[in-house]
Image (tube, rainbow, N blue to C red; front, side):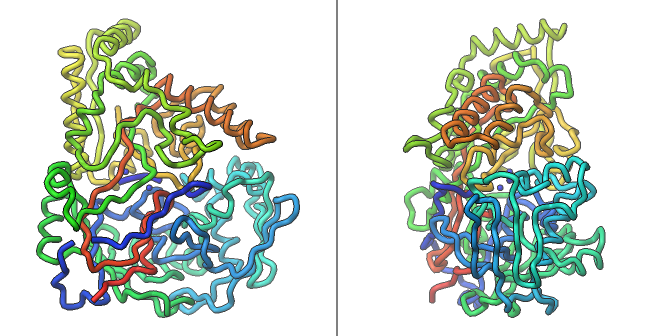
Length: 537
């Protein structure tokens, strides 16, 4: 999931339910109101079009699908009250609850799932996330324009029974059902608002614990209010969550100190100063930050240039600038995502050769790459968000590359709002972009699928036929051992070619009010789940 995509779930997904710690809020309504921050604006609420953690976090709290993901990644009841699976593992039948409603009073029915899924896989919708439907019967053919959306393997048997047919077994299928991409959509509402659907609070309809209010499509503050039409409203303890976008960590911390925020994301310096205080809280993530190169440009088609850039980055020093609890990356798949026979998959694919600082080798490869390009020097820009942390991040990269390559390189920086950065990344309007991906479910394929030649998220357009072949083979492997072998070989190809350059695995350091209880923070998928959150008196 894109992260500010700066946003899992499988056999070993760690989900932490925090009893969180900090200064007491001074708000008069603190008993039932949570004051929270995000560091980027919302791009869209349209489930078929959202790609980033900000949007998915909103959808995770204002909409609901077949399941919810609870503490320790436990599948908890959502709209499905019963699930039966055929002996061959290819047919799932979900019985839906009859008391679920949309916030406009309409009943939530199986037809809402059918419509939503068909809309997402329809090529006309332009969903960048439709590839996750691969494995559901006929999804691939529909996305390729070879079959009608009506042939997708999802059917409504009356109002309250949903039947899903797969082309092949999907090991993480049930966990996908807890991801907002697979949640229902109200066809009447989508058609009523047309192109405006999901572009503001009023152009959407809600079936989750909360409803969103006050987002106009461009403003930096809004709120979530308790949804009285939600089937499990008695379990929702908060009346309201106020959100504001805070791009400067000093501003966020000051708001926290004054009781105007119940949680604030910390900067590098703040992390150093505040670590160890009772307020200090670490949110562990399955998120990797990396550089994507625009490989439609000759200089970045050159593997020696890409490898040189990776070797020129001293990740240990780089992380000192960023601070916090982040750790240096030696793979795309992050630490702690999935274990294979008791061993962390990340340790199996870790590539320290191509991602360990080596200035001499970096200069050698850079000079070789320039010679192959017929150039004496290289000038390019790194695109990133306009947050304080992102700015510091690219400035550190800029400095390290200049130190390694001297006058042979000019590295410019381009800082833009998150929404703009997403748009420019998607359209290929960049040289190099600082990207991030958070796992949607705890399996390496959540990352490795991104870099297949035709994936919508492959903004850099890296392409490798053997890699594509291995990823495809992993999805049709006859055994688990064959599948893991295919994924391991694929990631090693990606890393050795530096199709992208991993920088670090993110773990967020926050100050969180000690009155805030019960937040569930997933390491993957839609991160924040506020349904069980409350403010202790």
